[in-house]
Image 1 (spheres, helix red, strand yellow):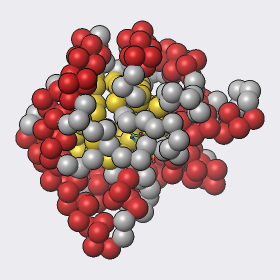
Image 2: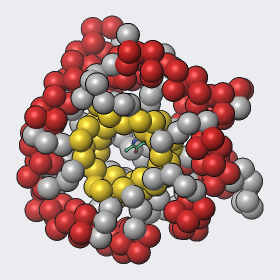
Image 3: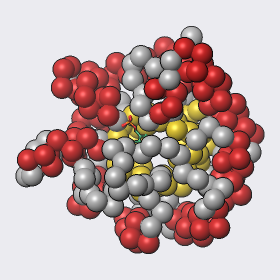
Length: 243
Ligand code: PXP
């Protein structure tokens, strides 16, 4: 089974910083701490409204942190220009609505296939590995493959919010989607809403090779510290993976 990588999303360190302005707490320091705790990558979402991560954070994460940077962004000309210049290791294309609290659903790769194809091509030719953040849906996965993305990140938000049989059914969809994506030659990632309580069954899906986790860990860090929170998440992932 492939190793399961852990990408730490440090957006909400910036959310707390921005609540008061100034420099503290610093998301770059959090990224360094994540590295020391064993993270395999850093994820940051540069939103149109810059509500958490700002342009200078991306610059610093790119140059000061010795871990692959996964830049989450919407499919806009502004973001394309920034990503082509910053050349992060990876770009994850997400849908973005200004009024949403967080990314509410996957990208509609079927609907935007024609626009996504050249967008993804430019980024990949520039050296960034592109993933599409999509729901666990076969039509979306086939579209991602036609578009030419090398990776899909499966949205686990619904799974995390559901309970009982509904959660079980959503997990089955995620697992089937991961199998389909892998059979189509895509690398499979997953993320959104993951916590100690719900990460196990997702981590156990053998086709998934990377999880991106943020909000829960930054919240947990208030109580235990970021280092311990990340190590505990890694342990939960590893335990499920090798069970
Ligand atoms: N993956 C993607 C594509 C996301 O947009 C987010 C949230 O920014 C995450 C993973 C992490 O989600 P959470 O903060 O709920 O762990």
